[in-house]
Structure formats: C-alpha cells, structure tokens
Length: 432
Image: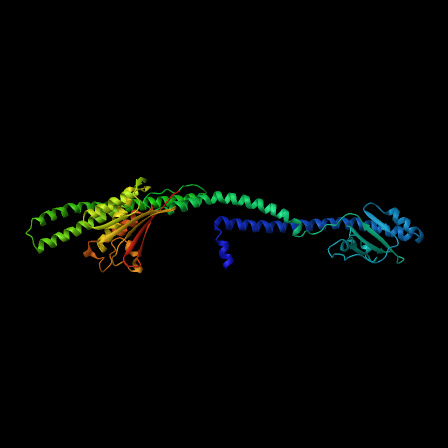
C-alpha cells in the first residue's frame, strides 16, 4: 500500500508518464518477441525446405552408388550452403529444438520419415546432422550460416532505453504543456480571498478552459455578493454614528449623575463598536503596496499611545524600509497595541528584520489566552471571558481586524509568554 501511495504522489504528469513508460516497455518487448519468433520460424522453414529437397536427392544418388564412390559423390553434391560427407558417425552435438528444422523435414518430405535423421545446431552456426541410407550407413550434412534465435533482454536493452526514453521525453513535454494551465488555476485560486480579485487564465484544453471560466464566474458572483453585504453594513454603521453623536451631545446636557454616566458609557460602547466594524470592513479593501519606513510607522503608533498616558514602549531600529500597504499594516499594529493596552494596561513593541522575514512583536503582562482559544480569537465578534469581556471596551473585532489587514501580506500568531502575558507576532516574508 505504501508503494502505491508513493507512486500516486508523483502528480498527474508523473503518473501518466509512468503509465506511458510501462506500456511502451511492455509493447516493445511483446512486439520484439513476436517479431523475432516469426523471423525464426520463417528462417527455420526456409532452411528445412532447402535441406529436405537436397537430402532426398542425395539419398537417391549416393545410396545407389557403390561404397567406394560415395565419398567422392558426396563432395561433388556439396554446395556453399550444404556440405555432405560420407560416411558419418551417428553422434550429434547438442540437442535439437522441438520447434526447429528437424520437426519440419519429415513434414516437407514424407520420404525422409524412415531414415532416422539426427539433427543438432553446430557451435559455429548452422545446422548439422546425419541421415541413415538404405544399407545402414550414414550420410553427414551441414548447413552454412547462423540460425535465427529468440532475443533476450540483454540483446535489446539499448533499443528499449532509446525507444522508451524518446517516448517518455515527448510525453513529459506534452504533459507539461497540458498541466501548466492546471498549475495556473491552482495558483490563482490560492490567492482568492486575499484582498485582491484574481482572474484564472482561460488557457489549455477545453476542459480546463471550462473549469477556469466556471471559477471566474463563481468568483465574480461571490465578490458581488460580498461587496453588496459589505457596503450595506458599512452604510448602516456609518449612518449610526450620526445619531450616536447626537446622543452624546444630549447626554452631555444632562445633570451630572449616575444616569448621565450610564448613558455616556452606552454611547461610548456603541461608538467603539461602530468604529470597529468600519475598521474591520476597511481591512478587506485592496491597497497598493509602496515603500514606507516601517520603524517610523510603528514608533508613531507607540508615541500616540504614550501621549494619552498609556504604558507603551518601542524597541527596534530607527529606520527600516519595506514595501507594504501602509494603511493596512498600520491598522494591524495599532489594533495589537490597543488590544494589549486594553487587557493588560501596557504594551512592549519590538521590530526586527532577518534575511527572510520582518518580525513585529507586541508583548503584554496580562492574563494571556487559553491554548485552546488561540485560533478562535481571530474570529469576528469573538470575546473571551474574564478580563477580555465587553466591560473592557472591546467589540470582539480587534484581532479579526489584524488578521484581515494582513491577508496577502503576512501572518499573525499568538503565544503565552513563559513568565505570564501574551505575545502577538506579525511575520512578513521578505521578497528577495
């Protein structure tokens, strides 16, 4: 089962190429064996026909002569292709193949059936043997030339490699051209939902073109549906900010007291919620990347937080150039800092660059997050209990905004620190 699994892991092109290789090899061996066997049978029939006729003639002529003239007569009757000698011993060399010349002689010349013919292949090639004459003596004969043999694997290994190699090369080139549209389709669909529309190339075989058209049409429908819903939600959220602002003004006109404070808290919560929703929706908007000073952007975020009296610090280089969507990267870092300040009261932001990535780390000394909820906190409107609750001012969209803003740029991960607190890390791959 393991070998079959490894074979199937070659991919479509590898599997088809393997099938073509095996099929070509089997076809080659089968055709070679059939051809050579047919050739051997044809050569054996030709040799048997030639030998049978001459043996009948030699039997009549030499058998009718007195013994003292038979040797000379045998020499006179010999030709370049058939040598005769008299007398000859009845011993033979080797063994006669059942499908060779011996089985055919008596079929071609029934008069030879009672002459006790002995046949064998000769070491130097050809067929040799003896035939018993009427007086009991034996006439020897030998054909010149090699007999046909059935080929072995070693005889045709070079031919096999040349044939299968050529077929395999042509097959791989063809399959590469056929599989490239599928690879393009896979690459395009892998980028779907990362903040920018994709178009699958409509190239290749008719089936691939039909699939690409279906994917493009499906994506267009999904984009239209999501855009409609997003615009509707953004419009509702934006329009609600105006009456919320009026409520704040009217609450401010009330006499100081618990009722006024409760109204203002509710208004602040509604405004924070609407602002978070708008921020989340803006995170899905496409934005072109351009060169920015990432260190300056992060230091500005930290300084703005510190200006409000928050415990926020930055550790990193004074300058770090990178080509990124500025608003989306600012939104991601700002929400991580805000999240740390809201739940832990302080934030430590660090920036570093390696050969393959840029890393932005935001540490806090808060209660952390349970290991089983590290992934679920990135879901929209997801709140945790304890300190990470509605009373802490969160709308459950901070980390969702971070994840959405980083789509197509990098990734964000969370981990509890060994000495307590939470560490959020943004990893942005560096394109060389």
